Image (cartoon, rainbow over all chains, first blue to last red; front, side, top):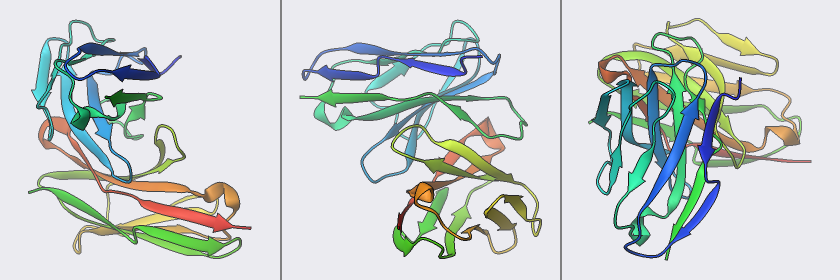
Length: 113
Length: 111
């Protein structure tokens, strides 16, 4: 199993540009999450999904959109990038009621200039 | 508002020391509390705690949960330089299966 994979690893955007961060998991987990982590801070939940076709907002959803057309994929879309979106983005997945918490992808480091 | 608070924010110790990291929480519909280790990359799972008073152990690391006082501790004995990392505490809520993270404790172990 590859676990949770994310692409790209790094990206630099100009203000106002858009991009999609990709996330795929091969563990057949129903639940998937997107977090951002700013320097010296914990993880803040952006969006999450409890299954294909179902998404919901987390703590900091403004400026982002998600979709969940399949169990495996959970892309995060940034529209009109702003410097405040400079952060490290982690995708995670888990099985409801599981005993090992969430499995995290390697992260995407995004800089908006 | 649901929140998770960790202390101390940072800690510097010498190899062989024992450290205790703290996590307190106020989360509606608590399901579990988790500890993760983060070494400049993705967090990796350490422990999940759901019941009060039952210690979880893995080698030199151990953790316990107090659901009455709403806190948990993570102990690391005989610390090694490889223990240097940020330790994150997260609380899982039953509602929507959301996870709330603390800001982490940065541990530095000096040889």
